[in-house]
Length: 250
Ligand SMILES: [Zn+2]
Image (cartoon, rainbow, N blue to C red; front, top):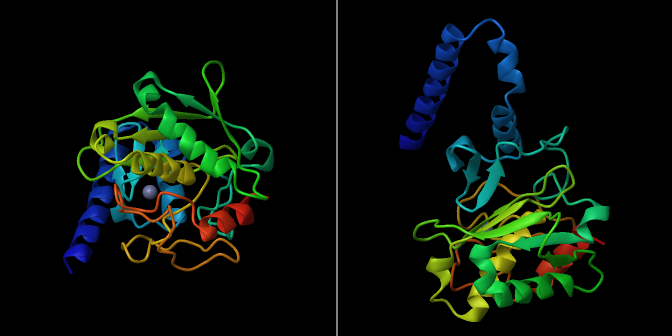
């Protein structure tokens, strides 16, 4: 009931904002609304099946279910919702074989953990996912330290336009007291989001419906992609994690 009330308020607020905008903007505002990149991204997120109440808006991005970043300037795929994969958007075959990761200066102190996470994704038999660390020039994904407060270890970004999600944030101070294996797990987990994986335990932790990777559905207590397990979850990719990676990228 409370939730319904909140949703209704959210809808009313949206209508209020929309009508407010119309009254102050010039007639071209109508066109502006349909091409507003942030609004496009918002509708894309809704189209992926995430309920409005799981989406938190910030200045330059939307944060969904606490650890997924949707930049407002991201490239929104043309068709949404009919694909059979987790997010409807995977990394293209040509790009997945060389995902260039740039380690921000704020994260170089965890280079060993990053390399450990990379080696896990890169050593899956029959899988084309391949991360490389670059120290200059063009990169695909930036990993940086970011204060996410208490309770959130990191944030990843889903792929868009065939490219891996462009940003990984690690709550470095928050995970500093964890074991090496757990610090590497956090990084490995966020990297999984950047190549399209949702939380394996989405149902148990009350998240929006995720689509099974073809042939690799179901729960998996050993999955590194289980959410809400900061500092306590699996530290290596499970058999099903690897099968899922091969199913999406082979
Ligand atoms: Zn996550």
